[in-house]
Image (cartoon, rainbow, N blue to C red; front, top):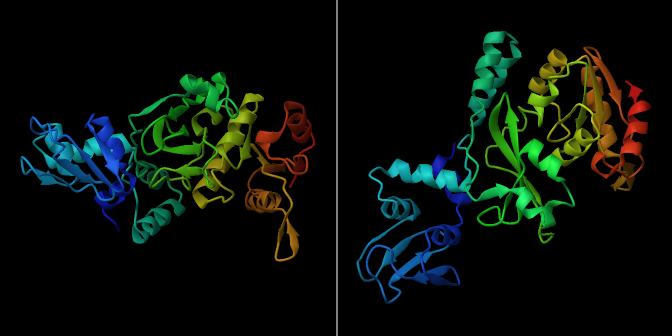
Length: 327
């Protein structure tokens, strides 16, 4: 298992850290050159490698890594306090279990006793959102193609104008009233793969919008992604996102325990693979339905061809829901 510090280093944007502490200077390649913050510098004596965070000052002879830099500039006595500040800046959650640990948790949960369930849920750690996230309301001109002010307020959607997640819309994921993960979607249009979860995100263990959805135990609509869920929710359906197209044993048990009916609404896109036509979304919907149908009433919502829930109008989704097929 990799250490917390190894994982944390991967998230650090060294140039942003220097900007955060208002260090005057400039970047030249992978090297930052500027005024040293640790003495009255007038000659750009300070340098930091923007690849690994190693720094030194040629005048006052101070040197170290990004952790000692934060410790010194924040005047902290303990090294661990500098780590905590960097975790807050990057939003690192520090929960990346090794294989043996994960196997033990699964073994416990499969026993299905209330005691084991509580132990399992307690292993989902609360995270800290990066400090540069601001309400997406301030950036409506950028995010409005995906979300509305009502959605932003209901789901506490944020936007990162600076830092590691620059130009990303940030959607927090709560589970049992606790912030356990967040989803980042690039809004610049410049990144090919624009979706990502924070390091160690427990997406196989949680649903998006769980806390709201369980207030209505009559039924729930399952979508693949968060944006799909938010759109369906805006059409006034009780909805959760699977955060993928796989249904873990834990999620299966949660659905059976909490709801009387489950409606599955996944993409309806035909694709070609190895010369054969496939429809990954509908194939996944049927697979999930088969896993649930012996325990609960399950329906498949077949959307118009070529559409996912986020692309459907209210009229289109209402009609598809009305004609949902019982599996």
